[in-house]
Image (cartoon, rainbow, N blue to C red; front, side):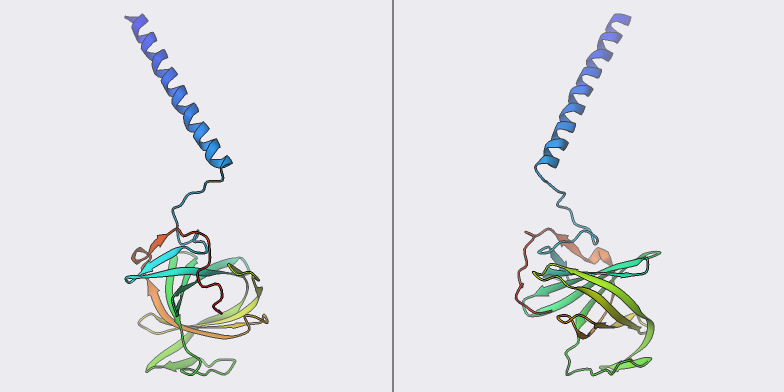
Amino acid sequence: MLFFLVLGFLAALFIWIQFRSKRMAVGRNAKLKGKVAIERTLFTLQIGDVVQYEQRDWILETVYRYQQDKFEWVEYLLRDNDDAAWLVVVEDDWLEVSWLTPVPEDQLCIELPPPRYIDHQGISYSLREKGEAKYSTEGRVNNQEGSCRFYDYQTKDGLQLSLEEYDSARDGGLDINVGRKINSLDLSLLPGDGKSVYANVSR
């Protein structure tokens, strides 16, 4: 009886070793072939990926990474034909995701430094936070980097208005965007081909 138990244990051990060796070989080959996981998260999105939100497909065109001291956040510039949107991802004590769209220059004119309160389309926004951060971009032929002053406004209902003043020659000027916080579960993130679709469209 003991002989059969030992024999069964040795057989099981042999099968396990073979299975483990095969798994390790697959892992080595995948690494050598340069394969990467295709699953996307809010922190691993790449140029050309598709962000689905409210029954629309948005293509990720540019990644903006910001750093203020040791605090970092990321903003994704998305496009759907002529429309643009920003997916802002901040993780401090908890994850905060916002969806913002640009405000045309002729709709809102703001002098710097901006006031404490801003009224836009009948909505009053109050200044919640301001500061300066370093930024860099990914996705363009001539990627940019520099400093940016930001002013974040919000309403009691959670609506947001964002001002960003850039210092670089190409990204210079004031960006104004409005939107709101959203639930990350309302987004679908799909891997793309790593190429820009609207490469010739300005920021």
